[in-house]
Length: 387
Image (cartoon, rainbow, N blue to C red):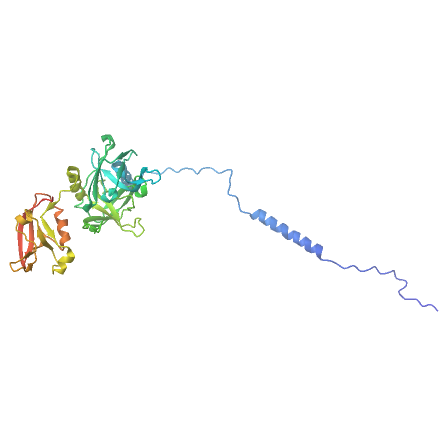
């Protein structure tokens, strides 16, 4: 007997196939990449190039402000008087034994007259083997003579330049300056030609010391006009374009301008420069006394005034009867006269004496106030030239 399956009459079943997700993942990946590429193409940074670029239209400015006009006028009127001073030293090449000149420093200066006299700082030309002066028109001349007065940091240079190239400075005065006045400095800072800076007079009667071996310079002008290395020896003007000082030093830890600059007063320049031109040196008035150093005077109990150690023979001081340290018949030492004032100008120390005397000229008669063994006295003294 044969049995039949109830499913025998159905068609045979097809083999089952496994469904895969890879095609869909690949498709999604292509879509994502395409999206990123499309975003990058639409958001990529521009190269900045524009073939249609054109110059901006120029806006015509109006007239200069009144202050600007004054500054421009002052610069154009005075720049021709300012010069560039180069300090040269000689250096020997030990291979060839050739001697060459190399710059060791530079500064500024100004034309004093049409005879070729140039004024600058003494420290600008100090220890120079050779000095060159470059005028406003860039013509350069070797210095023929250099005379200096280091006590006031002033020097005079002579050059053989044609008169038509020399534009003398216009001299002003410094005795009536006021704090707050405008100041203008023209010079060659860092070797840059003809630079003008502006500021005000910040203070008057300052004291600076250029060297430990010399007394301080008194009566100096302090200005806020930026002064940098290379400005030294350049002129300081007032708003009228008149010389009121000569820039000489700055206070700055970095060596660049910090808004504190100093200038030698014009009145001192106008007093000293003619003497340098006439004599090649400054003829200083003298009393003819040797003064004790401040430290020694303090050790001897003198804390005010100038103690006379010695009186020079046949000097104005000897003629006036002033006396230095002396010993009595028993050999006991006695202090000399202590000068306390010159024409009622008080002396705090021995250094003050020379600063006060520098305000006078040879032939002037002054009243010397002094103390002799506790007694206050006065005497008239006619000043003579220091030999």
